Length: 445
Image (cartoon, rainbow, N blue to C red; front, side, top):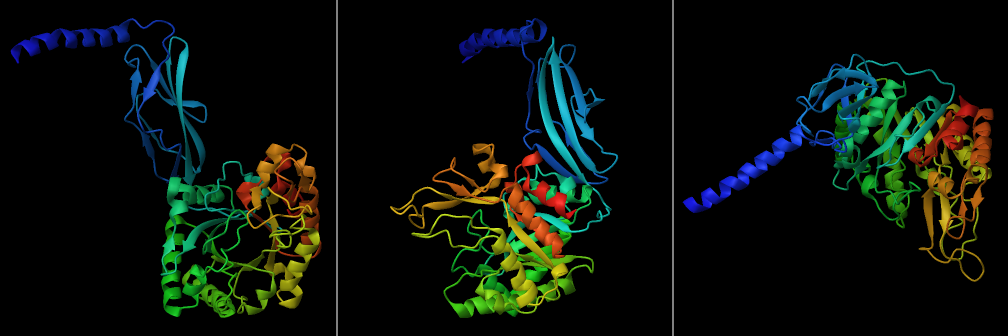
């Protein structure tokens, strides 16, 4: 044992010498490095009056006398220490950048800090322009100047009456949406649904997760308590009840589900603050007759953007969301159901219907040969897509709403004095001049 110790000693001395040599005689090509996990979360959401600390970092070479450290907030140097506590003076979105420099070379780490204001004022608007963010969507590229409200599908109702908020809690997504909305003067609304089938945002056929809960008074009361508590904790400004399992082979199940929507609205209105927004996203097919009274809702989101006639085996290819279908759907709730136009926000899609296989007649082959694709993916595949409604550069073809069509829809909404438009999904949109939301906003705002 003693002999082993003596043999180990020279090895340890060599390692110490090597480390010492690195710190004292690094050549000009050595690139500095930053180690530590504090930047593993690239987005931090805090409330006004709070601070956030970046620590636990090590540097190579050692900052003492060799590497220079610089912490910058929105480009301005705020500290040269190895740790940094950011204490924002006011709400907003901030970039915190750490730079470690050595002999002209720099290592960089970046985090964004979003500071949610304690008090805020909603900006005035003429018509609602509301992107509806999908459960795992991002608002990174959203142009907040073009919108008046934002909804986020972040609450899924489970048949036992509990609510799954997981998607919004991952990476502080719900907190990010609320904070950025408040910074930009837009109300943030929590969307509550059962299981959704995919990018089209429709309920899974023959599911009854949400409907079975709201048709049961006891489970509905428990649901209201959970939703009210979550909205208060996350500082949402309201709730949207999304469709509520409207596709089911058992007609009695559909009737019971839709009858519960009005009761849920009434109970939410009673439990939430007086200024809270409570809406419902409603269907436009034959089941519209079975909704109970929704007059207590702040407004209704009319899902008038998917006619369903271009899917399924042998279905002809075509535009699933023409202007005429939106007009008919809007009038179901205005004329047939008798709700005033200024209580109806009309849906517009930001996704495409695509085909992967066709039959011998050139129609859709099967239930598995079509899909829904975000509009932004269509734009990536075809630079001319924003000015059209069809592209052959995705699968066997893709049909969608381009800028000319959504502009027509927005003009119809404005001319007929509807309350505004919502866009599903808001995170499916492209940016800049290719944005559908921007085109709609230019007409409605």
